[in-house]
Image (spheres, one colour):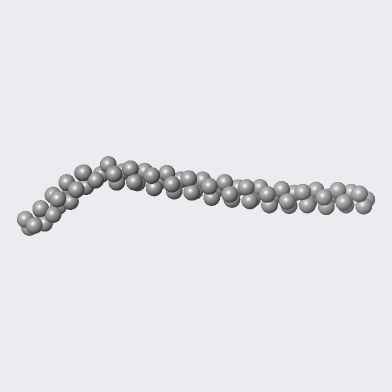
Length: 70
């Protein structure tokens, strides 16, 4: 029991001294993750917009061609 208490106390003290560094690391990791997610979202949006533009331009060309045929 005494050993367990000592270990717990030591871990708590260690955590208290390390907590600021851990918080910094966690914050940095979270920011990195957010940036990654933002980049992925931007890439997806750009690709979707390009595809939609492609499809819409083809549709418009088809409609124009059909009208010209008429």
